[in-house]
Structures are given as structure tokens and as C-alpha cells.
Length: 119
Image (cartoon, rainbow, N blue to C red; front, top):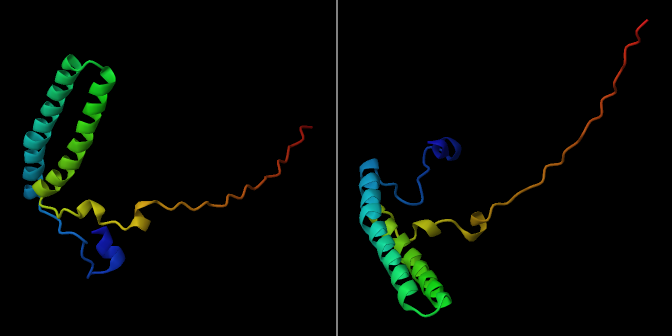
């Protein structure tokens, strides 16, 4: 609604926005099935590796690799469950992804204090 006021009545979002029902069901399915399953698998793999591997560094490294793969699998799955295009997170251009900050010049004014004389 804010973009329509700012950009005009012909403004359209760059990706299709799913309705509330699709978003709620998709996110529920994603969290209940995909996230929970991957979380349990990572927890089981972590436990198995710490019990069976001889070095803790090897177990931690393997678990870290599993978590990176988990993130790479999870994001496309979330977009699919929500009915969004796979490139939805990359819709921003490289220039808009980095916020640009401008410094504001602050001018401090000094006030002259006038003391009243008590007679």
C-alpha cells in the first residue's frame, strides 16, 4: 500500500505475493516437515560423530559442513513451500543490498545565559 502511494497506481511488486492462506500453509508445512526433519538429522549426525569419531575437531568440522549444506537445501525449500520463485531472495540488485549511509552535518548552537541580579 505504501509503494502504491509513493510510486503511483501502476506499481506492481517485482515478485508475485502469495495470499495469506498459501503463506500460512506453506510456512507450516516447511517448518513442520522440512525444518524439523533436517534439524533432527543434524542432531543425530552430530551425536553419532561425537561418539564415534576419534577427534573432536573432525566431528565439529563435519557437523559444520552439514549445517552449511542444510542452509543451502533449506532456503530453496522454503521458497518452494511459500509458492515464491526460486530467485526471490536475489531480487535486490547488488547496489541496493548494501545500505548507503550519509552523514548529517550537525550544527551546535551556543546559547548565551543571562543571569538575573538579585538586589
